[in-house]
Image (cartoon, rainbow, N blue to C red):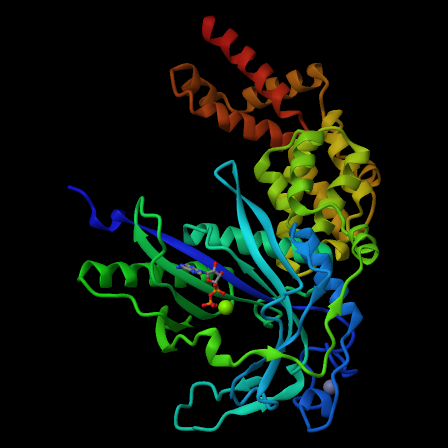
Length: 488
Ligand code: ADP
Ligand code: MG
Ligand code: ZN
């Protein structure tokens, strides 16, 4: 039986808005800050009072160019700001200054990795614009019909990054966003916080029969404030479209609103077309001119980017791709890892410690790696102590806890707590003898075939040595001893 749902494939293009973390807004001197008292960060320019003139923020242009270069876009020597006219309560001016026909940059790409393969998602354009204000709707109580408005966000600098429709599954959409967020964070040009709205995503999606070349009619889903929601909303919308087509219906070009609480998308409005906005060149701003020298100067400020870093870490330290992906998710975490490598040589073990125990603590304490108590030197040295068999991996857990608690060096802890691993075979053999003598009954059962008791003996030996015996040596000697007893 063929599943008719498999007849279709999805086509997805994402429009991502990122707020730039400049000190001031894009066209005035108001501070660009989040979370301040409503309507306190405003002036006649961002309020759109008559007679005021916008002045373009140079830093915002610099950050936009930096992003464009990192995403391999061509930066236009001239670009034009345009008025996008629409009425909405969060836009007191009645228009938004954006870019339309001649954007700052075009034709780039971002690579994502799926099942070990790299895939290019083309970037259509990156343009600059100003943010609108924020409407605050009363939560829960639907009898209250009034909403509030906070103008503070008006005029916050934004870049809009528009992808080509090269994404084919919700999972790919998630990977693209995650990668994009990594790049923007590395560039240090945006807070990239989806919950606070400094990174926002609208998802465009259509479906078509597999093998078909032309694109289907798309819908656009808004209000996606987490990566997970983007994935869920796309799944939902793809299924909705499939059902309509299977029933012989047509998809209408509409804008939908994702309700994360109900896990459903609702149709908000018929899609507006660019004609509806009556775009025209912004008369109060001259064309933006960008020199080659400036572009090259900005290019020099771009650090090693996440994908390059990942490839390098795998090659240079021979660590698994899975570990590398987690390490490079934050530049600071990758830096931490690389600092640790100066003190040990088993990088795989080191990377496991960081993506396991270290990240666990960071998540638990809700802190970043830069606030982590254990300096790279100490963690690296701890791994070194495992490597040269001074301590076992198990004892290392105790050393790790102690470093966290006291801030002491691993050598210090090993010495003062007397944690050095027991590797002396004679001593271990003696302990094995004692344990077997003390547990005659179990030994009897073991020799009569109850081999599961091997673990019991190991446990007793480790207990006697307070966990300090080298597990491999204990295993080997115990096995030899029991085998000899069996032969008798
Ligand atoms: P609009 O003018 O409706 O905003 P754009 O051409 O600017 O359309 O594209 C907006 C986004 O929609 C882009 O990310 C683009 O890749 C994506 N897109 C365009 N056409 C389709 C389609 N048929 N199916 C899915 N996504 C599409
Ligand atoms: Mg659009
Ligand atoms: Zn202002």
